[in-house]
Image 1: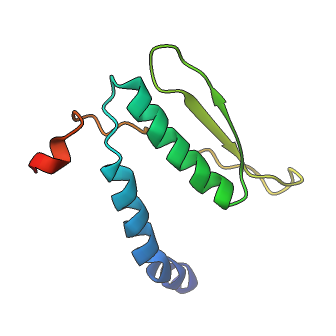
Image 2: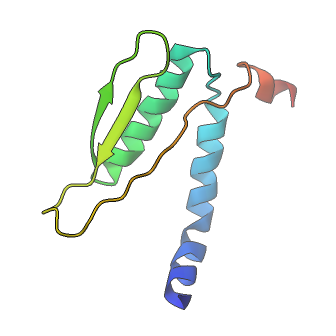
Length: 96
């Protein structure tokens, strides 16, 4: 457990920087283009980690993003459910 805590602590600055980038993207739920931009950013980050990605297009809402870790299938799978909308209208961060 201490090893896990140490590893997470070392990565905390990078995790916070990534979170700041994601929040700054501003992706209101009803703005498909904005949610898709956030999804594209997230997709690029997943690909940097070596995940295979593909999207399921949506005509009216942000596209669904699927990321799959390559492997032989023996190590199990992880399901991460994310929502990529930041809810508030674009420009809210400027006013905060």
